[in-house]
Length: 395
Image (tube, rainbow, N blue to C red):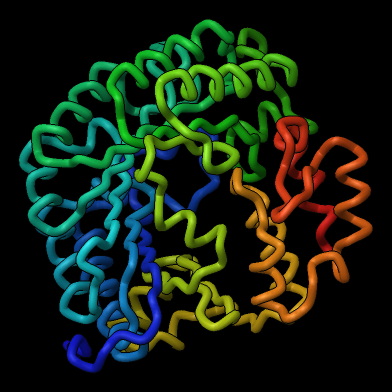
């Protein structure tokens, strides 16, 4: 592998690595993920290492600020496979000494030894998907783990040496009540993880949930109903209040962190920083050009084994126009609690934000959805209808 560490890093980037495997697909999940046997997983790891090597040739003079292994369930891979993948990245890229390196994990796919291997590999942040601590709710959404599995995985993560832990929790699940959601949230907060992601369920097309709960869904008799919009809103409001009392700051619509533990990698997405994606279906943005890898596993494996070049697996390449860059700057930046800084908009685009979006901002401020000062940001009411607000910034 070519190692460019000695050439001097010029710009900082993030790296995303997609591991599409899972033990069993959750009923709400629309991510690119599926079960696979050991042979296919090993073949994929080898192909992924070849793509990483090709990426190091292209981007090896960049300085890596963050890495995120997502999926799927990356911890379906063995500890040895995760070590090999991280070694491939570190051999090819220069890393900041304090680089944030995150691993997504599902309870039931980790043990003490595997988590120890992950620490040895260089992972220093772990994101554990709890989603709920209620037996009925976990069964309803098709999760493969129990609350006890989660608590065990969390303890092992701490004992292995993880000092930066995120936990995921979901609201507005079928059959979920405000009290059961708050019970899960508070029990998770009692563990004092450094970061909590609290999402409301979105019923996505192509999932079993869409067939049951979508616009024309056919929910069978006896199936639990989704909470009302009012109940969903109350769950969201109570989440912010409870976590604020426990020392968590909301820095994004659905993300809360203890001071200094905001997810650097995800902030990079919202701030439109360059990142390189590796693996099946992964996305990248470098120099205002976005692209996406093929989502066909057979094609990905064949191309990487035959022609290990980045262009071989890239299927969608789209140079962003200035208007598209402005749109992204606004609808991604507004996700952050701090909002969009007017000075930063001017520095990036060479024009004042008022000249482009003045009327839109004034209208949304009058509607109580935005506030305006040195920065433009969502109000609490604006967060409730954020999809509407973001759409207003599309040309």
